[in-house]
Image (cartoon, rainbow, N blue to C red):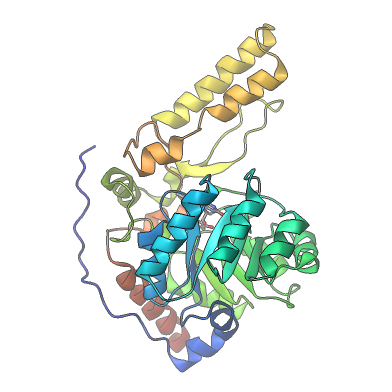
Length: 350
Ligand SMILES: Cc1cc2nc3c(=O)[nH]c(=O)nc-3n(C[C@H](O)[C@H](O)[C@H](O)COP(=O)(O)O)c2cc1C
C-alpha cells in the first residue's frame, strides 16, 4: 500500500448553523450537550485524542476523548491538552473494565469534565454515582431492559449502538434497537449510533425520537484526525461489506465480536484460534491458557494500525458506514455536509 491519502477536496468551512426546524428537532440533544449540533463523535481509542476531539467541538458537535487503557496521569494530561485547544464542551469516554476506573472518574472531576461516557459493559453503580456528582453520565444500553436499569441507576442519557458500528459490537442492528428502545425510553435523551453516515439517517432517527446521534467511522479520515495515512487510506478504499465482525472458531472459546476491515491479521486470527484449539484438544494447553492466547492475539493491534500504519496486521476497526468515507476532509466540511443532507431531507418532507 502506498502512504498517500487522497488530498482534501474541501477547504475548511465555517461551523454549520442548523435551521430552526432542525434545531427544534434535536433540541433535547443540544441542550444536553450544550452545543449547537446534536452529533456526538463516538470515542475511538487512539483516534479520539486532543486534536480530533477539539476539532469536533469547535465545529459545533460534541467531541469525546477516548481514555482506552490510559493511566490516570495520561488521561489528566490529555484532558488538559484538549482544554487548551477548545473552550467548547467535550466528554470523556471511560471503559468500565479499566482497573483504575474510579481514579479515572476522579481525574475527570478534577478537570471539571462536563460529560462522562461509561462504555464497554454495564457500568458499576459506584462509578455512575461518583461521576454524577460533577458531570452528566452517558451509558450504553443494548436492550430495553438494560436501558431502563441504567436510567434507574442514574444514567442521564443512553447511547444505543447497533451491530453496524465499528469496534466492539452487539448482535442487534441499529434500526431494530431504535424501534425497540426509542418509543419506550423517554425519561432521558437517547442517542443512536452505528452505521450512520449521512444527514438523512440523522433526521430519520431524530424523527423516531432520538435526541441526537453518535458517529465514529465517519470522522476517522478528518484532516484533524491523527490516524496514520495508511489507516485513512484503507478507510477511503473500503466498501461497507469490507467491515466485518470477527469470527469465533470454536464455541468453547468465546471471541468478542469486533467489526473491522478484513486484512492479513483477520486470517491469522482464525489460524491462531485453530492452532490453539488443537493444542487444547491435545492437552497441551488448559482452558484458561487457551482462552488467554486467543484474547492476546489482538493486544496492541489497534495502536499498530492507527498510529504505526500497519494495516496488514493491525486492527482496522471500522463500521459499515466506511463505504461513505470517500476522502480526507476537515471536520467542519464533514459537519457541513451532514447538516446540508439533514436540511434537504427535512425540506423534502414538506
Ligand atoms: C477505530 C474505532 C475505535 C473505537 N474505539 C472505541 C472506544 O475506545 N470506546 C467506545 O466506547 N467505542 C469505541 N468505538 C465505537 C465508536 O465510539 C462509535 O460508537 C461507533 O464508531 C459508531 O458507529 P459507526 O462507526 O458506524 O459510526 C470505536 C470505533 C472505531 C471505528
